[in-house]
Image (tube, rainbow, N blue to C red; front, side):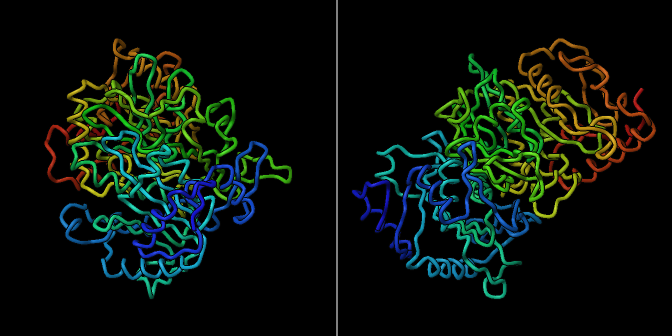
Length: 541
């Protein structure tokens, strides 16, 4: 039996698909309304209705992603195409099918929630998906983050990829062949994703992001871990960066229109959002700093791991559960959001990094080769809470600003980037939203006000005619002035009291860049020379 808010006309077709897949649930709740899913989440999943109208839930022991427990099935489809490494772990087809059959048995005679929709706002490149979950709030999450169908599209929906996420399924490593009692398994040949052992909803969207990052290059579409916005003249901008660098915050601009906050494709027609909503960090959220996100937390939104008081008021400053508190909401909660979420070819690309060492310039302009170098490097400081076990910032190099989600080699994605920015004469900037005046624990995080001013200057063309200096340590061109930003902030050494300590820290970070980039064997000397060079490790003049 199915329940689609009273419409049972297509129940038999859906049940035929479900049964053909080998599932025998008691009842299927398909694409039911956000309000009904909220009510069930409160009744069955210990959710709490907050004064904002959003439902607050807990994800228990997993409050971030579990990247070490994400596997890709090794088979004829993937053996020569996936970049097998410490991130892309191999899993056998036999072990996958064994788990799939156990999960099918687990669902038998139980209620399940189904969301049928799409990944991708561009009809030419979108993927039809089905998300099957055993908790209402995770189906609500799916309806927020994936692209919803029209009534007509739902009636004829036949999924090309299926996600099964069972919070109540008990994983047994000795039986299932996993490392621990949690897994995210991606089978690209069978077009199935399995998730169990974790309630962290981010695994749902990121697993499908990984799938798109594998599929789209074969269609000459560049998949990107970035946010995107545009203006009244259809001038699109992209913001690349790992979690915590400011993708969501800086793309949510009252003077521009949001296309999407995290995952996009760049096709022959322009940019399109993979998602139908946003998944924003909300630790220390304030209306003054992030009004769009603040106002998006209302009916139909989901708060993850946010402390709620006895009166239903969320406390965004309380990190007692995790620093990685989150809110999921549909794109239409953002005023003037672009729906369908597509845009023109980008005129500006911004790479965001949160340097906890406090030595990278706040903003630099990159050449084509410099863009490839920093894209392949993907440097940032991983911030507390975004992954299990991360308690304080630590330096990481994440290829393509999203290595955990990139199955193919970094060089492939970098070449796609280079082709796109060359074809469309796109400018590229590197913006550091991290620390100034010293490293984490000594200095302070660069004000969001100044980061916004740098972004605005890059988008408005204000940096095209200013004087630049060359940073000889990092081999970067840095503007001497930027509207709305103190001049002394633009040169990080000027913000340090101890200049010798600055140079020592900067040279250590430059060496880390060099050590990391050495793993790329088949890149041109022009790209390699666009980064730091050991013979330039000296004090700037």
